[in-house]
Amino acid sequence: MSVSEVTARVKQVIETGFGDIWVAGEVSGLVRASSGHLYLSLKDDGATLKAVVWRGAVPTLAIEPADGLEVLCHGRLEVYPPRGTYQLTIDRLHAVGTGALEARLRKLHAELEREGLFSPARKRRLPAFPRRVAVVTSPTGAAIADFLETFRARWRACELFVVPTRVQGAGAAEEIAAALALAGRIAPPVDVIALVRGGGSLEDLWAFNEEAAVRAVARSPVPVVSGVGHEIDVSLCDLAADVRALTPTDAAVRIAPDGSQIEATIAGLRERLATGLARRVELASERLGQFARGRILSDPARLVVDRRGLVADRAARLGRAARLACERAAERLQAGAGRLEAGSPLKLLARGYSVTTAADDAAPLRSIEAVAAGARIVTQLADGRLTSTVTATDRTPALIQERTPHHAASR
Image (cartoon, rainbow, N blue to C red; front, side, top):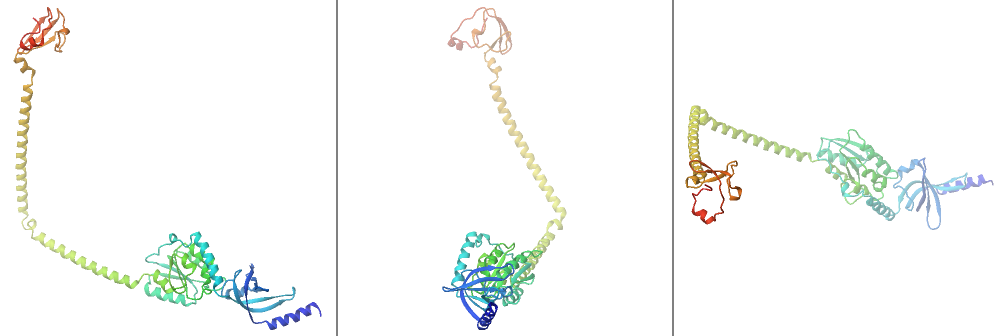
């Protein structure tokens, strides 16, 4: 037999006998080709089996394969004659248990937390009255129906844009990231982005734990509300979002204000406003009536008379105050004049004192040393002046000077 004949018979036997099989193993050597195909190996403790996921089957996978992940694959064995090899062509893939997924989840959570993607400081507040909201979700799932029903029941003054994406399976995380980016580019910009999906297993919700989706939530230019799964489900997208909702319905409640409550509030304010205005009108009417009954309208001339009396009274008070001020000022002036008169030098001269100066100097002489024999001096008395010539000086004791207050400084 030729090589081709042997290979053909082997191909017939293998493909006939293994056309519908389930294989469990650990993913190893995963390669993503530019064509979109996935090439990998499944291994256990004793053997390795090459496998491939064609591009068309990738979206149908329950979870994105990754190296080290324990999986259960469905497919068929196919022989490739040019190389004489066989491989498993996978059309379905599931994770075996949740241990490996949880380990990957914890590792990525720690990494993103260190970067600050889950920090409360990054959280943005939602607008009180949103006008444009984008919803990133599957257009055929129950999540979008629940969200829209709740949102429209609460708040209708808003435009809603549904940005469709797959929310489960291999490649879904990248589609979610692309949908979030598209929602952020809507013009005019939306006020909020809602990322919603119904409940499911950890494997079903895994796309919301993939790094691509989580980073897309974190870099969204507008606030993101994440409502993924049920109340007990917490994804990394929930942690990175600005607001985490428990369910898609809860996401609608957190974004949309309660229209009925707002209407009730407005009705209450309208009633209070009407009551307040009526009261203001009533008070104004009462004041107008009091004003109409007042003297200013009933007897205007009386008001003039009253004002004249008030002016006359204040003029009289002002006159009395002015006279009193003048009298007090005159008294103060008289007292000051008396004090000046008492200290006047002329008074001292009238009592017998005199002031002597040099003939050529107006400064009073205070010592005999300021003059010499032959100097001319002037003595000021109360009724005139004497001009003298000093013939001699004599230092007279102060006691004798005090006893002879009228003697002249020189003769």
